[in-house]
Structures are given as structure tokens and as C-alpha cells.
Image (cartoon, rainbow, N blue to C red):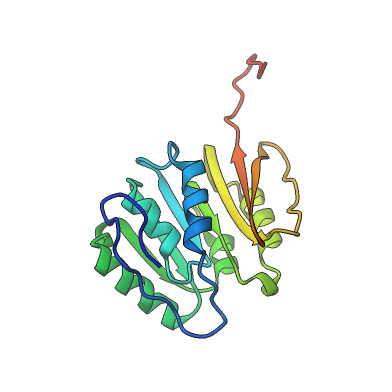
Length: 190
């Protein structure tokens, strides 16, 4: 596992041992960031269910202004901090030890990009999507990137959220949601 491009390009990232964490493969990550390449610079990122932190780290390496990493596992938190130090990206990162769903309940800030890649069998992806939309923590024109098994169809979300595009990489699916801007009085979206 490595950083694909940007200031930390080519740096190897440490991985967690065991089967509880399934890091995003380099192939999927390349496709994901190819789709986001013009949406990262200067943005605020949330890497929920962060695991190794590789998605948020990739975004920081590509010019994101900041990234918040949330994971409940103590070994994952240590590893994220180690990976941030190895990539020299600690200064723009915040690492939070805690349950991702509880974090969503308490959050009072907004993000431009949210990465969602919970353990597939945990059944947390759809509830996390609903919670993000309900608390509306995505800035206008913001993006949610959700990774899931390719055969899982992710739900549509109520306006102003919508599915921008879905990608398939073998057995992995990536669904990109976007949030439209607020309409001003008398404005038309046509």
C-alpha cells in the first residue's frame, strides 16, 4: 500500500494485521482519485472508518487543506498517526479515537469530501449515509465517496444529495454522491 501521487508520492503506508480491516486496493484507490482529481485541492476531508488512514492521506498528499480521521480501534489510531508521520502530513490532520456513528451524532462542522469505507459485514454504510444526509455535514458541491461490494446497490438520498456516479472495480463498487448548492430565493436550477 502506497501513496499514489502528490507531496507524499511513493511513500509506503503501514497496514493493520488481521481480517477486521480491509484496505482499499491501489487499483480502486487510483480509480477513485482519478474521478476526484479536480475536487481535492484546498478541501476539508473526513475519512470515516479510517482504518489505515490511506484515503485521507492520499487526499492530503494531493492538496486537501485538512483531513479528520475517525476510527474506533486503538491499533488503527496508532497506525494512522504513524502513517501521517511517515508521509509528513501530520500538520493538516486530526485523528479521533471513537465510534464513527457516534462521531456523526455529535459533529457540528462541515466537510467537502467524506470517505466511507466501513467493514462490509458491519452493516454501517447505509446508516452512515443516512446520518450524513440527515445532519447535512457536507458543504454545497461536496462529495461522499462510498466503497462497498460491487453487487450492493446503495440507496438514493433525499435532496440536496444525489448519486453522481457509480464505478465498479472487479468485486468492489464505489458510489460517488454529491450535494447541490442551496437555491437562493427566486433562483432556478435550470
